[in-house]
Length: 368
Image (cartoon, rainbow, N blue to C red):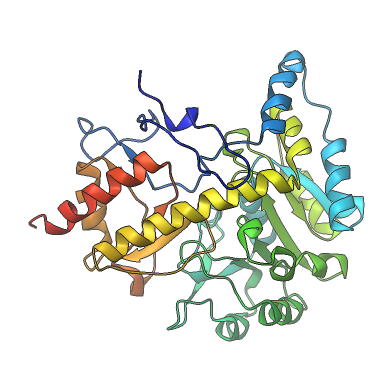
């Protein structure tokens, strides 16, 4: 029987999870439906999976499955204690995308959002569908978010500034001092929303986070998620740190509550040092494997602090994406005039990365 990436079990300490192969998932389809996707590299998940404590909590939560969730307080209390903030400065969300989308529309309405490009933009596309457009600032020549240009671009119509740190898809972290200075200055004029989806992977997470600016009263919004490093993408749990006015706005826009299993899992796994060490080691090994694949094919890539690697495939990314899809590999593209030849490769189980390693040289050599 084939073992899917869903069956991968975490090995705490520094060991890596082993698997016999990756099963295709119904929600993803290749360009040719006859070609099953064998390497799901277009998303940024953590196949290391949830911690043992989270798995146990999920099983126990089944006894409450018949009831609506009324158990947010234990998780909120843990976040308040860990972050040293007031209760009115934090709220939960059904995944950080939900919060980012609602806040982009709620804060951006009547004006425009300012963001770098390329960056994570699913929530900005959602805002555009609601009539809130985004002004884009190109990355610098070093592939880094140009904070000086971002600050200069804040205009009368700007209602919100969005940054992802580390940036997605480049995986690059901003200099902490420069980011803090930018947030303090920009937030005097408009709210600044910092997406810290991958913050646990930073060499020094607390130094690179801007959560302290929320504690100090600046109009900064920090989005964190349990989907990435904690391996709970399927349970849609995230949290927002912000000033009470912004928290109240988000609560007024949210129409659903969280789920029992996600709340239970997030509450017990938050800050689990042993689990995080194993998960981070796993993800770093995945990135190293992708680096080696790029090097073997003489492709330029950016060293990443996320659960993905951005690489220059030396040809239009759309063409490479189509070629890889015909070989059973899913990758993701991002907007940005200077990055038309770049593709983002997500971390995955060894079997998926091995399939990518075999498919990439074939895609590079394919005619037309």
